[in-house]
Each structure stands twice: as structure tokens, then as C-alpha cells.
Image (cartoon, rainbow over all chains, first blue to last red; front, top):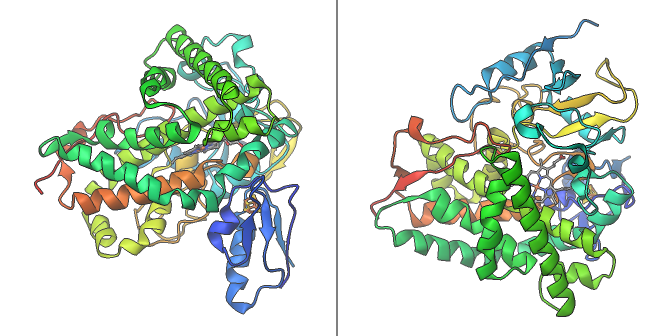
Length: 63
Length: 403
Ligand code: HEM
Ligand code: SF4
């Protein structure tokens, strides 16, 4: 599984960080998403998917 | 396709916690249907969870108030055209790129990490307010003494507004948001808040370096003064009555669901999930959000034409059995409640949601720890409901305690 994020779409809602702070963080400056882990291990696959589906701005994609 | 048409939005609630049965009936027939607006427009009513998300997530809709048709005379009646314009800085009403530019200036101040760092401080505000409640000798109005002061104190301090000045706009905020106010009163109240905000901006500019959100915002040098004062006003308005109403009606809900309250007391670690479930179950933004299509768009087989206004009904969407199968109408503090649309969806999704979550987490936890035998001090049917207000909740909540 591979996660990618699009900062230009992100509206800094923090939903991804709330869902899995191991995978996502937010930039201190403008609150946009910072991807911590591109290829999550099996233990984080479910939360990665959840974060992608919760993201209000469709800024997270899973492939 | 023949569409279901409603002459008006059913507003009668059968009990304090469930959405009007009439809207649930509409949802069960058609998650997207047509609704007659007060100005004669044949608009749309969206009651399905998936459909609300799709519309709020779509760039083909705007929240510009100039584009919206009038859904209910009491809400938008005699507003003159020029007053419906989105003011510079009111990014809730703006589209990209303005929305993006303005929201970005604040996003860094509302991150999950920043908000978590406030936990301890918010805890002391809650503790102080609970001590204050204790001075009332066994009975008090929870709204007046707890639910409203906590978020007001928090937002004032975050924005850098002095204690003495709080009263200057707290009353005006209530006037502005109350449907009991005449249009003239509401506009006068808004004017006073705007004047107050302008003064505040001028003062902060004259004394830079303050440790608050407005000072930080001004320090970026990005917003114009007018934008900054309207942004501050938006934060104040959006940040204070909403959380207050969740604390008020949330407490009422827990007191009326003793089995659920017991679960929360026995398993305090479920508080974060309990907050999500209360948000879903109560859905206090109960008329809206609203959007107007900027081009023709097909949603779920329905052709929404450019210029059509759509009213989203969050309370029924958050109880859509397609999203929450089984028992969507029950309060279940252990259910996976995430994914609700009580904070909206799309680029306008609530900027203050992480702050609101923390205020509720700490507020509910400490309230029931401090007052384990808290109970209602009137018959449940005598609790005055904010049925006709833009933000749902209770006007007051008389409570009592013995220890
Ligand atoms: C339980 C409490 C709250 C609820 C239920 C709530 C709900 C909402 C909803 C539904 C929206 C989206 C409106 C739309 O799409 O038309 C929104 C937007 C917003 N909220 Fe909240 N909110 C709460 C607390 C707060 C707090 C504490 C703050 C700030 C300190 C805040 C600031 C904002 C702002 C600035 C927006 C506009 C965002 C934008 O347009 O990009 N809210 N809120
Ligand atoms: S959930 Fe989406 S919009 Fe929110 S911070 Fe993460 S990437 Fe950005």
C-alpha cells in the first residue's frame, strides 16, 4: 500500500492526524498535511484507508 | 425522474433528541428531493449521508450568500441585497482562491497538536467554572453557569480579548444569533461587534507581539485590517454558541440516557468516541449547510441546475442507515461514529473542530466527575428547546446535585 497526499487540496482539518498520528502530521505554518509514512505496514493499513475516506478535501489517496 | 416535492421543511420535533419525523420520512423515500423555498424557488433537500458529503465536497457549489435563495423567511427575510454580500474576510461565505488564502492564515493555529497543547489550560477553565457552579448550593442553570461560559472564556482568551470587554459582545452575539431579535436589532448588534473588532485590530496593531491568535494573524502581515476584523468576528461567532449548545444539550442527552451515562462513568476512556457519537446523534447545525450550484451537476441521478439552492439536513444525514446500519436512531457511545457530517465536509469543514472536541472531551468528563449525581431539576418536557434557532440546543438546563 502506498499513501500520497496533495497539499494544495488540503484544508488543514486535522482529521488524518486525529485518525492516525503515526502516519500523518500537520505543518506548523499553515496546518497542511505532512505525510510521515509513505508505505504503511499492515498494522496501519486500515487507519490509512480510514484517513483517506474521512479527509474532507480528498487530499489523501491510497494506491 | 419524478421528484418528491415538499412544500416546506418539517420542523416539528417529536422529542428533544430526534430530528423531525417528517424529514426522516422524506429521507426514507428520497435522499435527494425537492423543497419549496420561501422566495418561490424550487430548490433541493438533501437528507442522505453520502449525498451530503458529495455536495459539500464538490467544487461546483458555492456558499456565497448572494447566490442562495431564501429558504425560510424568518432566517433571511428582510435582509437587503447589499447585506447579503460576503464581507471581505468572511471566508465561510467565500470560494477559492479567497477562501483558501484566508483559511490558510489561520489553519496553523488550529492544528491537532496546537489544540492538544491547550488541554491543560482548558482543564483549568473548566475546573474554575465547576467551582463556580458549586457556589450555587445544589441547583443551577447549567447553560448559564457552565455550558456557555466555558467556550466563551476559551475563545476570548484565544483571540486576546480582555475579560471586561467580553460582556460588550457576548450580549450582542446572542442578539445577532437569536431569531427573537428583529432584523434591525440583529443588524445593530452586528454593527457593534464589527466596530468592536475593528477597534481590537487597531489596538493589537498598536501593541504588537501579543500572545493570541489575532496578534499572530496580524504579525503575518497578510490580511487587510478589514479582513482581519471579519476573520476575528467569524471565529468568535462560529466558536462560541456552537460548542456551548453541544455542552448544554449533550448533558441533557446523557441525563436522559442513564444507561449510556453509566457506560461513560464506568469507562471514562471512551470519552473521545462518546463526543463523536453525541455530535452525530445531536447534529446541532439543523438547518443547513446550504449551497448553490454554480454549474449543472448530476448527483445520484438528479440534475441540479446552475443557480439551484440545496439545503442539507445534517440531523437526518447523520442517522442515515446506509452509513450507520442497525440502530442509527439510538445513542450508542461505543459505536464507531466517525465520518459524521456534524462539522460539515469539504473545504469549509469546521476550522475549530479540534478545539471543539477538546472542550467537549474535558467539559463532559470533568462535569460528571465533579457532579456524579447531577440530575435534571425540572420535568424533561419543561426544558426549553432551541427549535427555531439556527443552532439547536437548550435555552437553559436546570440541574441539581446533592454531593
Ligand atoms: C461543537 C461545536 C461546533 C460545531 C457543531 C461546528 C460546526 C461547523 C460546521 C457544520 C461548519 C461548516 C459550515 C458550512 O459548511 O457551511 C463549520 C465551519 C466553521 N467553524 Fe465550526 N463548529 C463548532 C465549533 C467551532 C469552533 C470552536 C470554532 C472556532 C474557534 C469554529 C470555527 C469555524 C469556522 C471558522 C468555520 C468556517 C470554515 C470555513 O469556511 O472554511 N467552529 N463549523
Ligand atoms: S484530513 Fe485531509 S484536509 Fe484534513 S489535514 Fe489531513 S489531508 Fe488535510
